[in-house]
Image (cartoon, rainbow, N blue to C red; front, side, top):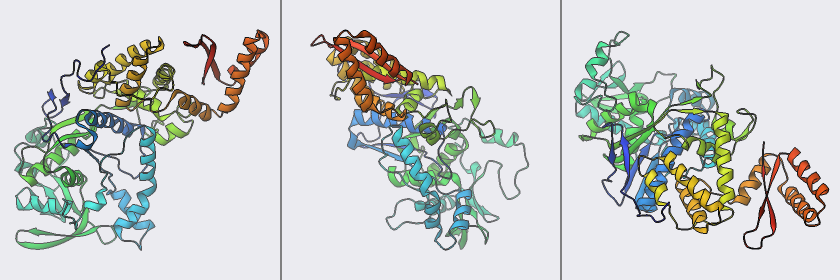
Length: 495
């Protein structure tokens, strides 16, 4: 292992879905590295599949801040609160409120829970977290909005109105399908259902959809063929992210991230809207996507009975018969490379918890210091190689266990790049004890009492206390103080 930031460091390289190749990530503006990641739809509580992109792109956010400085990275993660189910519930439950206020009332609980969940997973707060409802109609501050973006597409000949809908004309963009590598003619030839009569092409998608009298909607006006056309309605799914990313990151930015399932149609259609509205060749230079997640070898779904929310995992006994610390869930996710599929299991959580126990014992209560492990940094700079980083951290742990102060500090600092070891060993053990309904103060007192018995060679009483603690899930670990040579005892909760 080598210490120091620059030793072996060759810059950040990531896999770009757009080019299907690993490339150097060279920011458009080194003073402002810009990243957009698709956030949650806050109709319901976020599930553990939603946790993966939150964690993956938080690691990237941390790494970019480390490389460029915290003040030189802008991370935008949106909240989607424009959705037909949300709109309908808002209209039903809060008929006397303006639509945006009603939606806020409906989604506040789930949005708050999402924030609590991702904070428990160790995720930093994004630089900006816009809500879709705030970007439907033109804004007083002039930031890009959905209605204006749609008008630009109409003006440039990329959108048309039919039967109360404004649709994107996929045939108007020769490069359509460049991200997913789907050719428009293949989509047309392979269409399984008849093209809706009002669409020019089967792949054309909705930018704005008219609302009936009993449906919620926004009052928008569009200039179409020289006429002022009022259409009370709501935006399509894809236009939201095109508007919010442009509002805070500009017409072309550095990184766009999300789950693999979003490549088509969502991200493909984002590119189409943004490039055609702004007249640019690209929307984002680099596209990054995390792999799929399944649970215990099966696709997660409510029908399978294995649908698990982040909140349930953290606060209930639904998975594995116990609640799990957020840090355990985070490490379990990072033990698989972000582009690979992950099989989420109780065994993986148990493995992650055991690793964290070992790391916390190795660093003790040491405070983080400005000591970086070059091997950890190099692994992360190679397409977020968290598995390689974790392997390097295991080596640091081995050195730390031998008493190396530098290795302890290096392990603590390196873990911070992954959003791990944010507590001290004492705090970690106390939290685990609290989670298990064990009084940490009582355990500490019994541990000290046992040490007194050992010093007095009253081994029978010392063994009795050890056995009593073991019955309550507390495991003792005796060791020799490296300075005084006296016997010391650490403890942890084993479930």
